[in-house]
Amino acid sequence: MDMHYIRRGAGKPLLLIHGIGGSWRSWQLILDTLADAGREVVAVDLPGHGATPPLAGEVSTRTLADALTDFLRLNNLLGIDAVGSSMGARLVLELARRGGVLGAVVSLDPGGFWRSWEVPFFYYSVAASVRLVRLLQPLMPALTGNPVGRTALFAQFSARPWHLPPKLALDEMRAFAASPSFNELLYQLAYGEQQQGAPRGSIQAPLVIGWGRHDRVCPPQQAPRALALFPDARLHWFARSGHFPQWDTPEETVRLVLAVTSGENLPSLCLEDNTHVATSRSWTAVLGVGLALSVGSFWLLNRNK
Image (cartoon, rainbow, N blue to C red; front, side):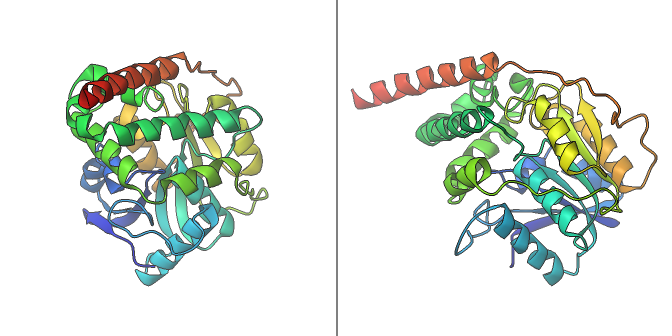
């Protein structure tokens, strides 16, 4: 399948795969830094996101992984090192499991490891947030242009949403609202086929799973589940990050990506023996959604007067 993508820099290719509702612009805080470090960065828009049209049939992790494999084969990029975020992080795990598609892999806060009450919490909280985002599109430049608005909109996704650049925030809110595949993918992530694992010794290339200690979308207690399914992986904790380390701690994210994909020894970065799992309460996210709802309701009421 042909996908829209951008290329920056020169050197060994590096694939960046965004999360649900995003686009290649989700990587804008680290894309140029990776390119300046000597990598040819290839950042795609997944089907149904950004400038890539949606798939004709089922939209799921499996079909997106198939489409990505076709894209890499078409562009002579099989074996490329890859970084994925959220849903994209699950995609790189799936492609690593299949073998012969990717090289070294960094999976940042992968979705798909929810259990019990976490499943409906994820589904309904994100679905409600996106419905609100679509309603508030006329207000988005104003909301994303100030720290209070960014905090309201991104409290579920970032440990420090008030620090996010306004352009990044507006790009993400526009992309979420415009994605024709968002609703089906969200349902598939929550209630569709569960992620299969890879037996120990089956993944030879470096594989690191990064997790934000303050992730409110994929809580940190899910990290051991991911490691249980992918025992060849090593775990890196982002101490000051929420669901998107490339937003909250971009410099640390770049260091990790460059170290993993260069084959560097990682004892100082990867904490695979650290079994302590931080828990992250969701009160900030709930308050943020509530604030955004209040702002949206006020605007809608005034618009209808």
